[in-house]
Length: 138
Length: 192
Image 1 (tube, chains in turn purple, red):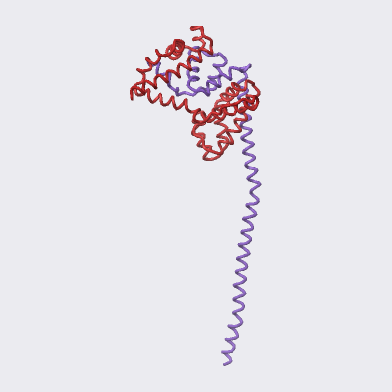
Image 2: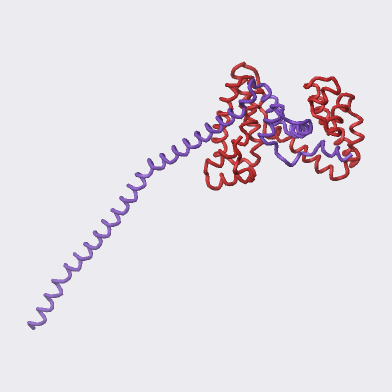
């Protein structure tokens, strides 16, 4: 009765594309067929897909269709990645300009403070010297 | 068929990689695992080879966009649901028919129910299985027995029973579903 255990088991191994294509092409033994069909009975995704794949006129071309679709998928992903990078580059000058402006403002602020402090010192200097002269005369 | 160099990495792990570094290439590796199944699913609903191929590309685009928006834990069930909804919407647009949108719950219902049964099996449900099998109708019992116990392929069952392929598939599917219901009822009665 151990076989009864199989009815509700999900099967650990995934159904590979190769096995599925071999099954669809009819290049499998009865034992292999049963193994594939058992997996099909577990998942509605796989079983519905097989129903559809069986409707293709040229099943030998299925692999080519898959390759082409995968190629397109990777092209889509690469284009998306490139667009993302381009957008990054476009956004970069604005960030650079902002940083440069902040730096310039910092430098200007520093110069202004330095000049202000120097002029303050210069204004104080003549007053000190004149008091020294007066005290010397006395 | 080209070998997937990432075959040893589970879907979940690849999804995690994508969510952690945002690299689209992980999505490419993941999605191409389901190209053949998606192509078959689209063909089942659309009944047109070119439309099915276009539809797969549209589903890929949708998946890439959606996966970047929110987190998905079970890619296969999610992709199945997205693809099926997309096909049904396409059919509705072209035929003006009402299409039922399936939800994540429905898509996972089967898996969860299987898991529940798997769990229950550990509680010695095997004894009940044999009895439940006897309660199926003659056709279902015959096909389920030939398929699961005698390990015959669909074709062999067709030859043995004289039913056609569709009938065999249907008897096995329905037999399995009914067996599950009978078994659940028995377990409920036992526990109750």
